[in-house]
Image (cartoon, rainbow, N blue to C red; front, top):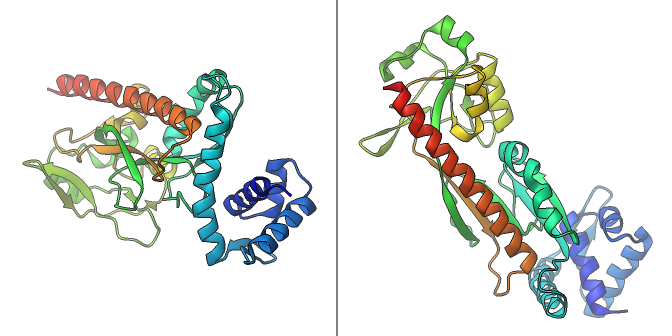
Length: 312
């Protein structure tokens, strides 16, 4: 049995943590996938995967093999690609995007990219949690906010301006805050990555330095959709990238407050694993997505300048 085929099957099972999912993805019977994994383990003399009734987990040997063979398989595909037309990209991409950007920006435009590369397949994860790029088998992820040193390569795309918002109904009930001191009589919708964590409160810049003001609030959320909806429903103020609320502002569903006390802009970055020969399909997608995000950031900054002028 061809070793490359066995390794490709192993990588798919590893990334999907499922024999059934890998079989569906590869277009093979589940029994064939199981046979190929057993054959690979026998050939290497090592157990690669732990099977339970609920999930499939890699052993230490399986983790090591994945880290080595994923790059090798990408390089094999690159060699095969040398003899295809330069414009032809083939294979599968797996990406992760923040929920709001996936829904509002990337998915409506994704057809443009796929039309250029009809032989490509793409798996899109839309979540606000911090996925494990390597363990979960993503080719690249888009992150909004500061990126911790994780051993990944970060391609900086720019910084989204942030604004403070509230619903008109909330402001009619609680009044419009004019100063930071007024926030003592207001509520904040708290955003945390993990429920149970403590919110930093109302963030703003003072002489260029980030500051935090503790605020009361009855609602805490851990994703961008819930955050915006809580504000629309009148539960309090939110601090959010302008790009994510500009339509709600245009429709009058949200209103800007305290324009002179906004948080520092949030960086947007594409993250990918360090590889000497990044697959052309991944590079092409990151170039397309990077251009899309940079265009969106520039539009957000232009709108922020117009709003500042209008507020004066």
